[in-house]
Image (cartoon, rainbow, N blue to C red; front, side):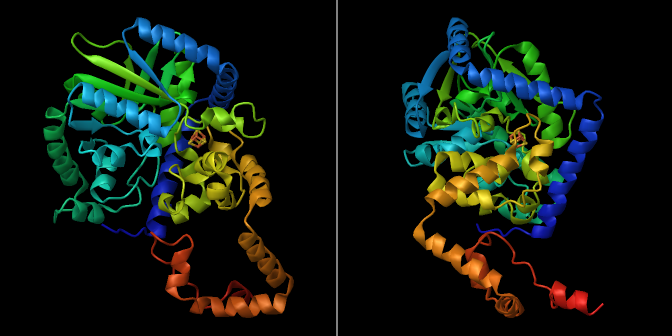
Length: 426
Ligand code: SF4
C-alpha cells in the first residue's frame, strides 16, 4: 500500500513530541548534568569496549544466557535462523528493534517460509502497509488515523477503536508463536543482564509466552553498571516522548525454568568507527529519536526519504560512516542549525559530524555529482540567470519534484509570488 506523507501534519506531530521533551527535561534541575554524565559514561565505555563486552559475556553465560557473536548482518540472520531451526519454530513475534531492520531480518526469514509478526503497534501498522518505519521510536508517525483505518480495513478511524482492533489481532499471534525476538536498549556489563524498554508491554508478553527469547544488540549497547542504567533510563524516556519513564523497562538476567534466552551481539560495521576522533561519538547514541523530532529537515521530509535505515541527523552520520558513496549525500540534508546537538541526551556533536562527513563525501564524490555542483555554482554566480530560473520554478513538473526527496510525500504547493517579489511589493 502506498501512503504519501503530509508535510504539515508530520511537522506538527513531531513538533508536539519535541515540545513534550522540552517540558519533561525542564522538570529536572540536573538535566544538563545528567546529559554530561551520560556522555562521559558512554565515552568511557566506548574506549574500553573490549573489556566491558568480555565482562558482560562472562556474566551473561554464568546467568544461563546463550551468547552469540555476529560480525555482520548476514551472520546475525543466520544465527537467528539456526536457533529457529533447532526449535522447529515457524512463527515469531518480534518487538521493535532497529538492528533487525538494519540486518533486514524480516525479509530474510519471510523468504525462508517463517511468519514474522511485528508486535509494536506502530511497527505492525507499517508492516501491514508494507512500508519501513519512518522513525526509530514512532515508526508510523507519518500516518494519520484515517490512513491507519484503511490499512486495517476498518471504517471507524477512532484511535482507541483501532488500537483495540490491533490488540485483538496481536493477542492471537502472541499465543500461537514459538519464539519471541526483541531488541536491547542497554546491556549491563556488571550484571550480565540486558534491558528492553517498551510502552506497550509487547516485548514482555511475547517473551513470557514463548519458550525461546532471542535478543539482538549492537556492540555499543553496553553500559558498565546498574547505577549508570538509572542515568540512561531517566534520559531516554524524556528525550524520546517526554515521559518520565518508559512504561515497561524490563531487565532480563536469566531464563525461567524450561526456557531459553539467546543474545546475539552484532558488530556490522560499528567497530570501524572506534578510534575515529571525529566520528566515534555516534556510538554513544541511545536511539531516543530526539534529534529527528527537532530537525527542521526531518520534520518536513519524513523518514522515508532518507536512504539509510535510520533516518534523521544520527542516521545521516551512521549511514555515512558505513558507506560514504551510498549515504554521504545525507550529510547535506541539514540546515546545520545545531538543534540536533542541543537536544541529544548523550551530547553527540551531530551537526559538526555532518559538516565533517560533507568533507569526506566531497573527496569521494562521483564525477557526475561534481559536474552538478559546478553547474550550480555557475548559476548561483549569475544573479540574472538564477532569478529567471526561480521564476520558472513554479512550473516545475511534479515528476521532477518527486525524483528528489519527494517519493513518499505530498508535493507542497509553491507560492504564487516569490519571496523577493513579495518583499519588493511591500
Ligand atoms: S543521536 Fe542523540 S538525539 Fe539522536 S537518537 Fe541518538 S541519542 Fe537520541
